[in-house]
Length: 114
Length: 109
Image (cartoon, rainbow over all chains, first blue to last red; front, side, top):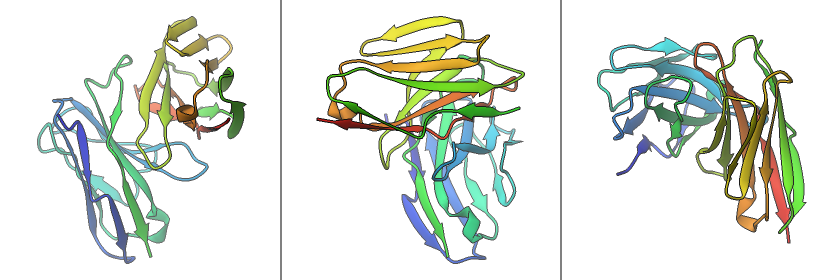
């Protein structure tokens, strides 16, 4: 059982380019999340999905979009990358998005936008 | 509000005990989580408190006081492998996690 996988592991991207970060989980979790982690700041929620077919905006959604066509996959797309989107991106999942649910994290994608 | 604070960095000695504090202010609260994150790796779950009191799990314990907006993580018998960042997060009224910036714990021999 792999848990949550993310691809790519790292990427250097020119500003203005489009990029999709992939996230797949095999735990049949209902809820999935995308966070960014920047030095000196806590994890910040970008977008989330409580169940397949639904998505919601988190704290910092601008410049990002997501889709949830099925339970397992939750890709994050940067339509036109900017240097301020340089960060480490973590995908996470949990069973149901309620108070007792533990979130499990993927290994992260380190993105540099030049 | 979504305010949560924890110290930036702490240093402790191998074999000793260390307490990492976390304070928060929120109008909606559904529990307090602690995660461990080694450098370059993903956060991993350590503990969850929703009621006041102490939860013990091996060498790690976590305490919560809802009335004070306060939690701590207690690590006993410190080992070198405990060198990591420790992330505090509360779950708000929308069941979203609000994260602190993390406390980097340095263990010295």
